[in-house]
Image 1 (cartoon, rainbow over the protein chains, first blue to last red):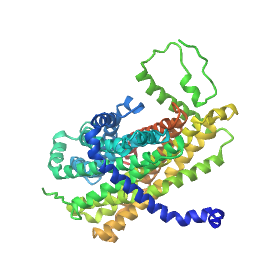
Image 2: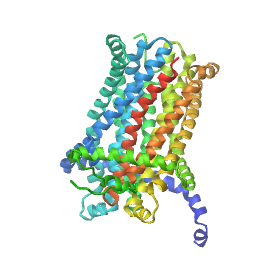
Image 3: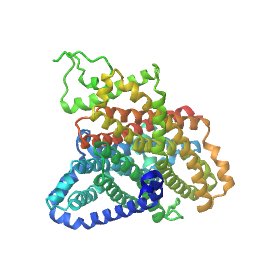
Image 4: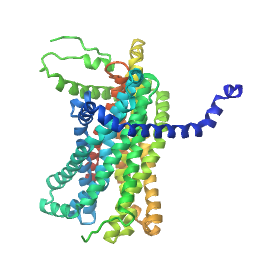
Length: 281
Length: 280
């Protein structure tokens, strides 16, 4: 005991593996509880789920004033679709095949940029918002109050949000993908002056429905992971207002890593090393 | 019409209270975002001006640089590696189908330097550095520490914002180089050991599409991203509305969103300008 009191840093370093493992276990238990609470939440908190779905897709506070999650994700995918067209047109032009820009839009947008950018947008908007909200509830002792009133806090706060997020993600992601296509087409055809028939031909030839489906799978898995991470960090925030701010930052950092990793793992799993891609059709 | 004398001390608190006589009065929904954007620009102008006015806060600058670097280093590695593998995986599928797998080095280097480097840097600097900065400044603001600084005659823009802005820009520039290196190395490892690309032709391809101009543009983009993410974080942290945990959480949330949005726009514009400048 005295040894520990005299050398706090040494002991903290020694205990680090144990605390890390403990944190992993703690998160896993939290996620399990949140998933287990879903049926209860659907049964008893339907109204809250509807309210949260609206809040998640439209945002809360100042963010709602500029259009919420929907507009922000749309904006981000518009910007990346544009970047892709500009960069692709010029790089392909270097080797004389800028006619294939439409193919690039159908291929790269679906496989890389739309899932990653939508995931980033989700983490930044509804993810960070959820952490801030739950963290504030924790720091104002509202979660303790829920428990005191015999309301299951994980079902009421976390499971409802997970269900709402799962409802909101499909329309949100559809809009994101459509906007990234439109941005690429607009940039290539109207700004860079390629003929629209050429663009549309290569675009629709190489737009594969299975690719689109697997990119929806990526988006749904990402939304689930983001919601898990952000609710966990918010639910367990400590240390008052500064702590809530830090928890929000930490949650965003964690979910950025998870977003990219999920996109990679699903791509490797779905497309395999062969790539599931045939240029000759 | 209020004719309140604008507070000339360029404290960030002064910006919102200033009103001009004779301008049309917008509705709240229009005025508030506009005021936010205007305030950000005013504060940025002040911060840039204070860079050239002594005393420069060298100590704060170093501490902040170290802070941002420490917060951002591990996430950078963890985001850059899967991102690189994802891009070179997809590109190699494409190149092999075209019968040009020898060019995968060119693709990996070009992707890493022109897009992945700045983009990952944006994500990390805005997602990790700016959020911590905003949480730090925001909690100081709600504890009235910023007001205390002003009472002591210390300008918070000079003392806090200018060094943070520079620190964020510097760290973004350094991180960008790190991501580029990881990008090329990761592309090499994945292409050569997993997808059976010839290592010699990979190495030979690296410099085909990517040269000094691309590298310079990528660095400039990353530094700009860093500066802007730092400015947004500081502005949102100082202009916190309300008190308590929800206010700080919201501020951090909005910092991430606004930083990402402005950075993606800058990326489009920067890419277009870069291509114009490097066009042969």
